[in-house]
Length: 269
Image (cartoon, rainbow, N blue to C red; front, side, top):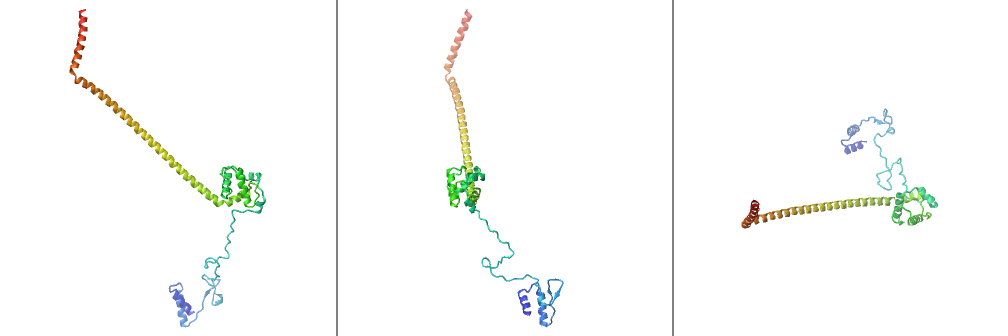
């Protein structure tokens, strides 16, 4: 007992039971005995019987190592078992026994969009039905029959509700990837179309601006030429009268003679 207390003090010199351990070491060294009170299942009672000791702290129970995984992790016996995953694609004996007909396919209630989806899923499993147009023609019927035969179902070329569900489960991942790729491509085309439209608008705007500038230049040139012609005409007239005074005087004399003769004749008569 003395060694246990000393070991505790060596390991935990400032532990919560350090003071108690020191007192017990002093008591044992002094050779005095004292009754040890331990906790019972009933906390209101005490006893000195070692068989009645009830541990009050956490109890460490040794466990066998786990065969796989972390050996320090021990699964609880009360832990709920993980549910068994249900596969998305299952071909049952009932599906193999049921033959698809026009009636069973009509009972599925497919519209044009659903038929396109079925055609896309058939293409994803290499049934090769061609373009997904929502119309079940001969090529689509051949693809359905091919898929049915691949999985042991009657090759009728017509689907049942269970077969459509199985096809959806079989192509769950591929169809999701196909839809994501199609959406990405559509966004890319939309961005390209917007960019092309913006380019066309910018080009048209530049052409309009070029036409406006050309029209402005032509109008400016026309006004300038017209003004220059008027100025030249005026200048020629001014030069003719300014640099030929004799002609101007003769013209004046002639005009005066004509007027005088007219007036003289009028006076004579």
